[in-house]
Length: 227
Length: 252
Ligand code: HEM
Ligand code: FES
Image 1 (tube, rainbow over the protein chains, first blue to last red):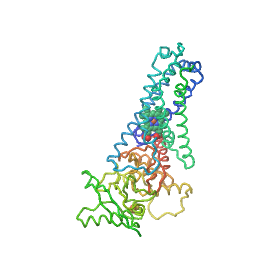
Image 2: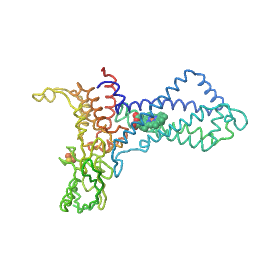
Image 3: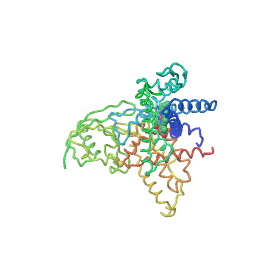
Image 4: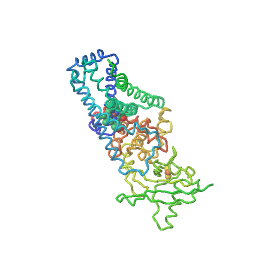
């Protein structure tokens, strides 16, 4: 009855695993954003940061494997929960109408999440597992700008930027529910603070998604005179 | 006193094994001071006169305290009003000529027995799993023998307002029974008498809830909006943390 194994199979326990992994992913999203924004300081600052990160290997591999694990757990456990929820309403209502304030962000959690998964795989193939000094790094002046050049060339393509921005909007929607949701799932709810947490959740999501999107928007508007 | 006419699309289902479907009826000259259940009584009278099977629905007190009644009206559990059971919903809340779609609670944990009647014995099993306290029988104890903090007794009382109607499950997009279970857990764990069994209680009740194959909570809070007693999702948060602590501290 008291064994921990049933914690990991119970509804509440698995929700809390989603919440913990979600929180870790949020921390990653913040850290990654801070690094990315260095692109506004020019090629040197950005490439130096990329080099410093690479200098942290082999320790960095550990972090990457951990992050990958967290991502897979989050995706897998939410997938199982969503499937169970689908089965739990075994016959569908003829009419569906909300009585509360069920938002689009909440309804779309599984879809924004899946889009994020597709995005992350694409993103890794796009910027991580590539030749950082190959033809994609060469800008208008004919010189190679390393990873900085790769990013600028990628976002100079409106289709590429649009997909990136769409994924960041999905991230924003996911977080606007995710942040307030993990706090409730962990077990904190207070008549005074919970409304504040909800407001914070929305503002945080907006800031994160707009800050990430500012990079492709900036490059799109200023290409080809970027560096 | 005014009268209205309505078109009803009612879910009819012979029993749990057969497929159900919507049937259309007209409800004529409905007194707007009637309750929703009285309106159904009028329709049933008419159906009986026509030699048809009346619509089966659950009810008992008809004054909003027993938790027996309930149906989903145009997609909303207990109809459009907040904080109201179906028996306390009056026909003045509907317009003349309106069409109402009337359905049973839909959840794997609440099998349909007939028409609008569902089997809610899953709730009884959740209570039986841990929703009790152990006391010595005998003479009733003195009312003030055990002091209780005012805040705790208020919270326990709010949770104890749950009448177990199942609207939370019906309204939840995932057919989750978290609000019901949380209200029962929170009711007892806020009182000194509930402390002794508190860790076992939350574990047993959550795990029984899972066994009944309700869905998982995804914090959409539709349950709170549909609850005729307006029980807060605060209780769900409390159960989440109680369950986590009970599990991680358990020694066996
Ligand atoms: C693989 C891609 C992802 C998928 C498929 C996914 C899916 C989901 C789903 C379906 C939920 C709701 C679970 C429920 O309500 O039962 C959820 C919750 C959450 N997700 Fe994601 N997600 C993904 C990626 C992310 C990322 C990248 C982050 C962080 C930035 C994140 C943060 C969260 C948070 C904080 C929650 C709330 C946990 C809670 O309800 O307590 N997710 N996710
Ligand atoms: S019949 Fe008792 S609560 Fe409605």
